Length: 398
Image 1 (spheres, rainbow, N blue to C red):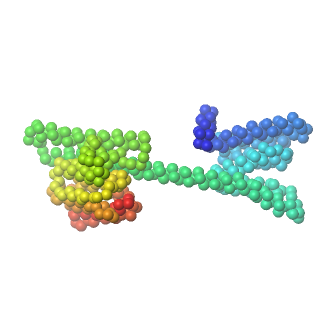
Image 2: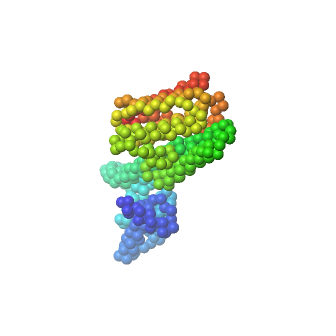
Image 3: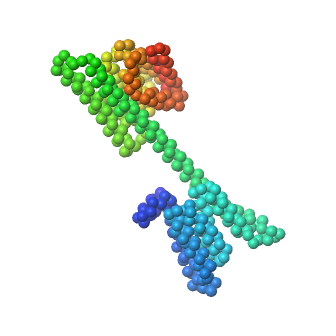
């Protein structure tokens, strides 16, 4: 079915139309050809009863409705439906019956109310002229109800399926936008914020004593800019390909774009080393900005899922960036990550800087709060005077 739809779409595209309903267009072409063939056959066998101005006009209007429905089905299907219904009542032909049934189903597919109104028109027109006193009215009504409700129900079911697919598409697009925004914030925004802070720190510290130290600081600044560029390219690649829902950086990559060392094939040991490497890199960044603190990573005995690793590495990167942007370098900070059988516990404490430059919009932690709370965890931030404390618990099943 998908191959047929693709072939019809290509055929319609070659005709120069941007029709979004190729199945409707193809059906209308087939019905128009069948109507012309049947009318020509009947005209050849019984010209006196078939070829007259009224019948010819109805056939032409039906054809115009069918051909117009290839491009504007919401409008021209009504013309084909009404003209086909009158033509079916005027002369015994099979194709007009197929036209009105198909048009009813398509109208119900495009719009629920249109399908219901079309079905009502057919029921009224087919029972018109039947004597109310005779028993034929009830029988005719029941027959027509069962007959004409079939395309209505079919169209409504297809309409519901299309709406469900559309909603799923919108949900995927929304998820992709949220993931992209989080990726941009977690990588590029934090890299640029660190670069600004590093430049400010260097400016405050004054010129280095020797050329060696001067070149070392320049290399550090260039490495920070290079990380931002690497992450920019990673996000662009993810936007162009969108292979899966994941961050541009996999857990097995370090923040400078080089693969993290893998000490063994044991997944627990590998993940422990990846997290420790991430913490060491972030600690080095903070030390270059004048920070001093404790960084504690507990041991875990069961491997974490890839999704949990992405969530944990992204959250840790955001927390360290939050310390660099908002904490006081002269005060002590502490980051602790612990594991038990049920949850992952993360605790961060620092002292807010009196001259907070407000590098950031504050949306990064809010995104992780939403993710963790949706997974059934807890995310608490407490502020007392200048002391800032975060405690998060993430269920292992997340």
